[in-house]
Amino acid sequence: MSFRSPDPTPEIIVWVENLAKQFVLHNQGAAILEVLRDVSLTLRSGDCLVLNGPSGAGKSSLLRCIYGNYKSDSGRIVVRHNGQPVDMVAATPREVLSVRRQTLGYVSQFLKVIPRVATIDVVAEPLRREGMEAGRARDNAATMLHRLNVPERLWKLAPATFSGGEQQRVNIARGFVSDYPVMLLDEPTSALDATNREEVIALVQEKLAAGAAVIGIFHDEDVRDRLATHLLNMAPLREAA
Amino acid sequence: MNSGSTAPLLSVSGLSHYYGAITGCCGVSFDLWPGEVIGVVGESGSGKTTLLNCISGRMAPTVGKVEFCTRTEGLADIYRMSEAERRMLMRTDWGFVHQNPRDGLRMGVSAGANIGERLMAVGARHYGEIRDTANDWLGKVEFNLDRMDHLPSTFSGGMQQRLQIARNLVTGPRLVFMDEPTGGLDVSVQARLLDLLRELVTDLGLSAIVVTHDLAVARLITQRLMVMRQGEVVETGLTDQVLDDPQHPYSQLLVSSILQV
Ligand SMILES: Nc1ncnc2c1ncn2[C@@H]1O[C@H](COP(=O)(O)OP(=O)(O)OP(=O)(O)O)[C@@H](O)[C@H]1O
Ligand SMILES: [Mg+2]
Image (cartoon, rainbow over all chains, first blue to last red; front, side, top):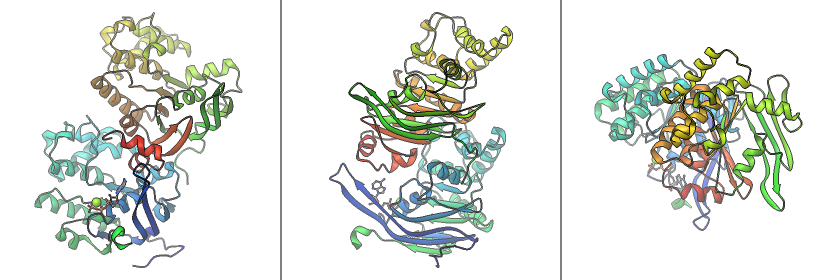
């Protein structure tokens, strides 16, 4: 992969330069946990970069830094947002929210359930946030839930009591319901059966074909091999240091 | 980069308030943009309510400036307005939801009158319309309309709080201050009230400043968070970032002292 271009060409949608992240655990004797050091990567339209490495290598942390959920210590995370580069490390919270609303989608490993909200509304919420009218947002949510084989009788219920696989499918539906040009996927297929795994692969492939860029973590080798256009190998830093 | 409007709705700079030798809050600055909900968290006595009272026009700060984007003049220092202008602002553009509904309701008049009175204060005169609007709002907060003509003192805490919220929102304020809006209620009532607030905040695109000690409330209804300790803001940021990757020792302590948010 090529990167470090100070003025990247417009087809580059995401570039990360020399990213570093450590956790300082103030209430545990100020222990320092270094998780990311000198991470750089570049994504163009249609790229699917798969993060590879053992547990604790910092894969999820990297996705969370890119999404602005974790605070990076140094480096740059530039995302092309409405045609303009935005550095997520330096951006104000308000800018980060705007990038999340329109450009950057994130599917976490587990559904962060909003208590007592019906599944259909959990899935429709990103569209409502973009300002889509409630009826249309629900229709789109329904299409996505159908695709992921979430039975209609569950739609009115809150996902809190669903099985792990059902929750994961709700989470994926929520992540894919909106048309983000960049998607961050943290093990979206880990709790799925073969049929649903195929459906997720198809969803990602359609995204890529439509010009999106994806950064994903997939423990399933088959999924990884079929989706990855690039690999980033990561290793836990504590051992390396 | 710009998302939406170019001016903040509220701009607070260098605000401190001292009660004699005691510091209420110290050196607080932030901007609130239209449609944004900011949470203020911190232990009791950390200055949350002092800050809220200063920025909501109820208590002049010892130093510092609070500016609000008025409909006619843009950003204006609320403590340099006349008392009458400030009162008008508080009645029309602002709402204030108190922790104790008794502080925000008129206990001597009916539920319906509690709403109607606010509407009349901003110039509504037509009885039928006032009644319709009041009904509409009481419906939105899931208030049992059969109880419309009863006194607030005959309602449960949860119902009183719903009524207080309706009374505040009925005039279409552009900014709502809330001080522990779900505090003092039992857990199941709290949960339902929180659902309601979440819906209102998203559907109406409200701008709000919410003081709470409950991080789950903050997670669910705010986009940005300020963590206060001993009168100072020790950390600010996106709500999910502050809760998932707190930087300041005190924020870390606060987040780790609760099990799950
Ligand atoms: N919020 C946090 N606070 C403190 N430490 C954290 C936090 N999040 C992650 N870590 C630590 O950072 C390191 C990397 O974790 P991360 O979850 O990024 O690994 P991963 O590669 O995704 O692992 P897995 O494959 O098990 O999901 C771990 O040592 C983890 O304990
Ligand atoms: Mg992980």
